[in-house]
Amino acid sequence: TKLGPVSEAAPSETEYAFDAGLSSVDRAHTARRSNQQNLRTDALYRFVTSIHYEGMVSACILINCATMGLEAQQRASEDLPKGWVLMTNIAEHVFTAFFFLEFLLNWRVFGLQHFTLRTEDGRGNFADAVLAIGTGVGLAWVVPAITFLSGVQGSNGAWRSLSVLRALRLARLVRVFRKVPLLREAWMLIRGLTDSARTLLWTVVVIFFVTYTFAIFGIVLIVENLKWARDDYLEEADQIRLALLLGMMQGVDRMMYTLVQVLAGDSFHSFMRDILIYLPWSWIYFYGYIAIASLVLMNLVTAIIVENALETSRCDKEQMYADKEAGRAKEIKELEHMFAEMDVDGSGTLNLDEFQASFLDDALRKKWILLDFRQEDCKNLFDMLDDGDGEVSLEEFFDGLMRMRGGAQAKEIFTLQKMMHKLSRRLPPEWSSGGMARLSTRSMASKGHLATSKSRAMSANAH
Image 1: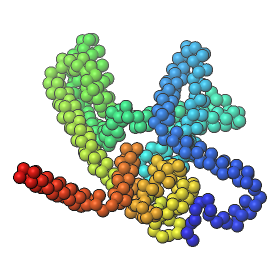
Image 2: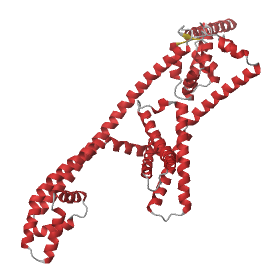
Image 3: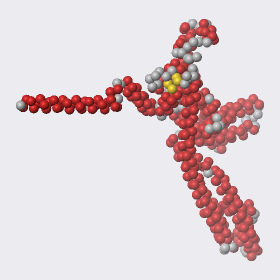
Image 4: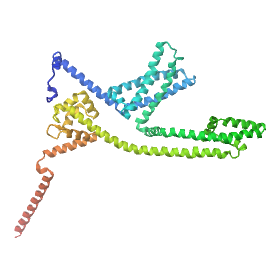
């Protein structure tokens, strides 16, 4: 059946029984409490989605990272004042309570879909919640409570070692870099690092095999010759020097470690000069390794990382376009679903009563809030979407809402366009574009006729 006016909708038997037990004052109080609850929900949503709330959470994450650094310093050196120790302990519980409250607010406003693993934002929110709850509530409150109830000493028990996992909370800094526009460049660096993780992994593997190959050649070419030199140079200084050199290179593992020192440029010329005393040609071996592992391979890795960054940037533009198209398709589908939920009588159009009823439904009201419309905007919104026939079709509904997306300016422009359109429909035909042209022609013709009459009258007076 078609839904009548909201204030005059026929109540069900349950509502009759409920109203029968309530006086008019009780019903007024019930309606007032419902309106206050709706206002609180709207205010909570606006607070959680505001930039001030996000800035406050980011600031708390940064301050919490600083207090964790003080706590680490306290464990390393026991010379900190007792006041600092007490402050870090209090700060730990304060930040745990704050992050737990943040989790509850997000759950209350957005629901479980805020932490879904199907979307990138959902996965980020889920990881952030795990870090906040697991390393906060779990390690700051739950673990100490279990330790106390079980009678295990905190300093000796296995629970004590779990406190190290609290350092994982520092990963929440990624959220600050990701959501604060001022730190956009830092987020780009972090994202570039994660995108290059695979390239860096294979770089380490290739360097390992190159170093392993050169270590085998080094043992055959250098270590064996140093052993023979030990038999030829019998002076004590030479024996000590050769013993030190053989200690650095006698074995594949030691030779690889020495080559990594050469690759990093870590003061390798000192022992290279000692080797040149006994093997003058050994510089060819070491500089050959530097040429392959450092100059060639590292430059290739740099080129690959730059290419990946450019490819990622290009893919980001294509992904942004694809995401925009997918977002538009999703909005169309959501608006169609929303229209179907509002169309109670199934007529394919919405009247004012159905429009007002949608603002009283909890699920539809949340959707209107996401579209930045409130209950007091109901009548004005219906008038803007309606073309004058008293009903809003699916095309009018979709076209109007899509054109009003984008803030107050878009709404004002759309409102002005609708007012001009309705005004043009109320004007008489002669004020339309064709009517105005005909009216202008008639005016010019009448003015020409008047000028002709005046010239004839002046001629008659002259005669």
